[in-house]
Length: 163
Image (cartoon, rainbow, N blue to C red; front, top):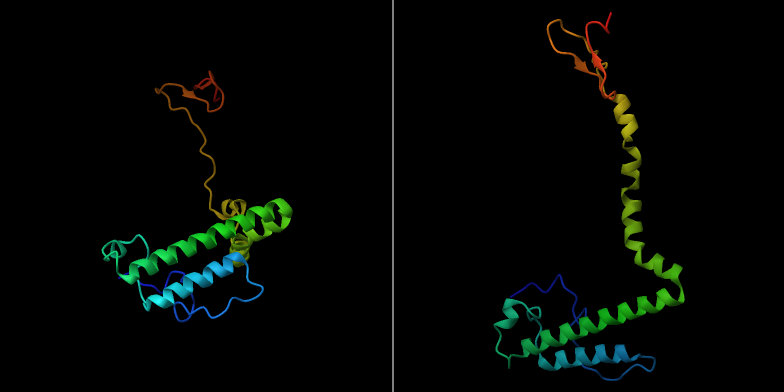
């Protein structure tokens, strides 16, 4: 069975709880989440494979773990869609706040690596620190053909031009 510790679950503790009452300030999505948790609690299962995995496919369709995994997948999808809709609305209402929210993780990563990057030498500093040999001076060897001068098409170094 797939490990259940690394994926989001319906409820952090107890893997589903009986629904006694709906809070007065609960939104439709909150009520849906509570309902999914209640249904899982009613199934009396505490572990199930992730929806769509080989382990899940091998379960008998009447196995309560099959239904628990399906409920979990549906609830996680609903939450993801709600988050997408919230971000879309935020992008329309307050683009700056949206940009700040969607780039927060990248900004945190950049802040974490910035000190190490600041300590690195730039390309110019690395080039200056290298031990460069002086440029090779072209010399004509008697008996050899003329040497084409780099960057000057049609010009050649000959024994007559080097004197």
